[in-house]
Length: 358
Image (tube, rainbow, N blue to C red; front, top):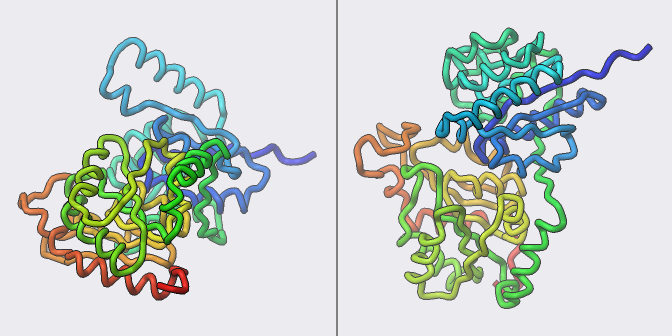
């Protein structure tokens, strides 16, 4: 009689970059347990990132952020329903890859006999360790968060890591990018550089004036066409960049996360800061140049090659703050247009297949 199929739950709720950095964990888990049933609990607004991932059997979307802001009868009913769902699944293992108190509570709620988590000193909130009963060994600071996630597999024994970042979307999501490119045939006549000025933290923002100056130079000196991309609440930013530019640019249409992946596949280069679009492009293998300040590229940057991360280290660098404690944003402002342009030239010479005439 064959052994029963193992039932695994990954708990990684948000955000785009954190989810992308977890994909090698999923791929490795599936490689080592091809017959297991693997579920992933994720914030509803990000679920399309993994909805069609071939390594997953089930996606469990939740609205924890919504529940915290809307404590009412409807929220309590959703919470109760989710709690019952977790118990009914009878998971053998949970993998808490966020290291927060709330994700530890979720793991505990499942009743799983094996609840894997990080070493206490690797948890973002140390109390998380109390909710899990299998802990990975301590990982010293300085490593990449993808490796930190992969280290959690050690609680099950030896493993061979699969450093792959599959982003699977449907043909209908790809069609948005195809239609946009068909409607803008001139954009396709040269390599396309995507510029995305947005970021989740105000401290991660580089100035719009610098993006505009850089974009002009990418057109006039390197032969790129410029596609300005944006997310929710960022359309005014790209409009302002376009208005400041001397060269022609194109502005991307409004997209869902999945549709934006189709658009990023069309890029020969991406320039931005530590943001969701940056992480998606890095996962897709698009060469990237990124500006860093409050967060560290060695930990949170691109995991693969074809990338250049720029930062100007100060005594207060890598503070991980949403608001600059000094009120200056000096760490971001110290990175100049020339710095980014020079990095782009180096990257282009090494990795980007430019047209023969450029």
